Amino acid sequence: MDATIETFNKIAPQYVELTFDKISQFELNEFISMVPKEAKVLDVGCGSGRDLHYLMDYKFDVVGIDLSEGIINEAKKRVPKGNFQIMDMRGMEFEDNTFDGIWCCVTLCNIKREDLQRTLKEFKRILKPRGVLYISVKEGEGERVINDEKYNNLPLHFTFYQKDEIENALKKENFNIIKNYASEGEDANWMNIFTKASS
Image (cartoon, rainbow, N blue to C red; front, side, top):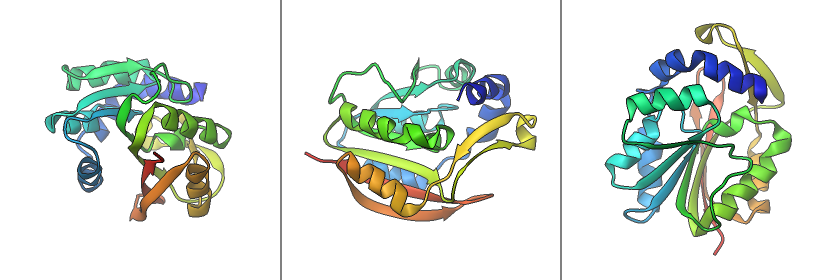
């Protein structure tokens, strides 16, 4: 994880430049339709601030967290009115039952598989009863470090998941799965999973 954060700090300007306009509008609109008006929402692994900005336009009270200081600094330039905090999703500083919704796009791919369950437990802790959680993960097997040419061939950790594996992990933390569908990516399919915390 340290190496991945170091990479994100080094590539922050080009990462934000490459990702800011690549918005998952369909998934965001699905998420928006599921949470209350003027909801308090957490964007986990907020990256460039792209999705936080979109949610702010819908008048949600949004907090964006990321573990890369470099990425957060770049996001603040793009979304100067955004509420950004440097924080580790595996152990967050928020009170129990704080948020109506959590948006977690791609971010779970960058932690080790062994950290998945405690991260989902944290999500459940800070969500209100029947709060909405959206996650997207890469479909596949194993974990590996990828050196992407567009990011100077620096190392980024990726964990891949099977459908049953990720759904079982969510159910273990009492998340009820609303829908899970695949979308095509450059090098793998993405699973888009919408859930609700148990009441």
